[in-house]
Amino acid sequence: VDDNTQHEMENLQRAFHGFTNMYRLIKRIGEGTFSTVYKAEDLRYDHYDNSWDIEKDSEKWSPPPLKSYPSTNTSSMTMGGSLPDFDQRRRKRKYVAIKKITVTSSPTRILNELELLHDLRNCPSVCPLITAFRSTDQVVAILPYFRHADFRTYFRNMTVSDTAIYLRSLFTALSFVHDRNILHRDIKPTNFLYDPSRRRGVLVDFGLAEREGTDCKSCMCHDDPLLRKSRLRAAHDANGAPHNGYPKQDTRPARRANRAGTRGFRAPEVLFKCTEQTTKIDIWSVGVILLTILSRRFPFFNSADDVEAMIEIATIFGQKRMRSAAQLHGCMFETTIPTIGTTGFSLERIILWSTCRSDTGEELTPDEKTAVSFLYRCLDLDPGRRISAEEALRHEFLRERSV
Ligand code: ADP
Ligand code: MG
Image 1 (cartoon, protein in one colour):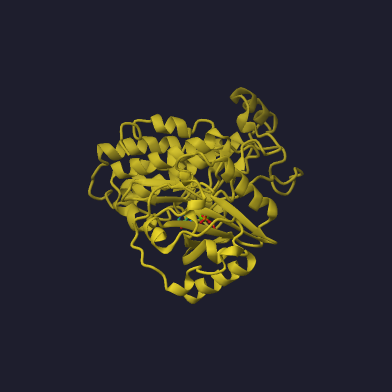
Image 2: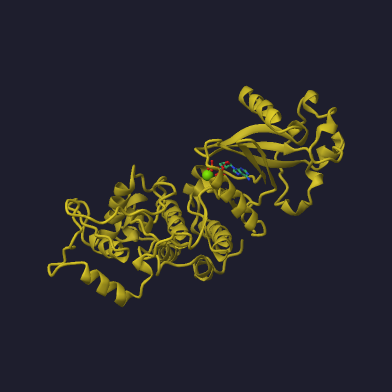
């Protein structure tokens, strides 16, 4: 245990009476804007029912120095019960992930995350919440520890079949989440913990998740296409220019929409500030993951802000499709950037390029072609036409593969 972890253990013990009797911190496994996550041994696992026992952790375990054993002070435990003795623990050790939520997070945000996790507790492939503690402004969530590998260490070696199995696991989780009308909003490799050796993954991090339909304004992308066309026509003059669409004369209130998420993974409707976003934004993000795997480039998109992100997407899809995508949400997309062509490039070409196969005249393998046809369904600029998680599981790319 390093000094930092030791120090943290003391902090937690101070905030949560009896903490050292319940958990033994092992190491820090994640640090982000919203939390610090520790791996810990659960010293009182047998006080829970074992329904959260996702899988046994087979990592080599060596007993910690004796002094850190909670041999005394058992009376201070907050939940009662006696501690398992040394031998018992040695046989059935359990690990947890302790997510210490940054104290500057808003209370509503913390509550939202815990509430959604609670709602999703029975979804396979979603990492369940075991319990949570609060001491004044400090909240910690306790989750079963899930062994996983860093995406960057395995994605370049994934075969098309490995990729399909990975996505099947991710879409299984998403189909449950979406079925409960919840948008995850932050789908990316670090939030899908995957173990390539077991070919299993769990979805974590519901810090930005929200229920569908919480937006208070409607967006015309949900209108009937004919109605949308006539509304668009009414908003433009005879030359097709918007009546009040140019910044100088623009009298409209600024558009506001939820734009939370991670750069590079944001769906076009998020960039266009659609005010009625749906679970389809998560599907786009999965598409970005698939594009990353097929092109062997991570991060695939690397924009600093939303405008750059639009430029990156427009470079692939071309001005024409980008313009119609913007119009779906009542936006205009115009650019004079010379590298953005009218029709863009096919995803096949992008993949051949980025895997250095365009000069050799090589083609995609039949397996890759199936993957690309599926990729087009995930990266549809129109959220209304984009594939859903449930449909994805029935797509030939993901179907007939055993996990
Ligand atoms: P943040 O909101 O800070 O991104 P996350 O919930 O995504 O917090 O957790 C951050 C990191 O901690 C993850 O990317 C992962 O590496 C690790 N982690 C989180 N939960 C678990 C878990 N249940 N098992 C193992 N590692 C986890
Ligand atoms: Mg995260």
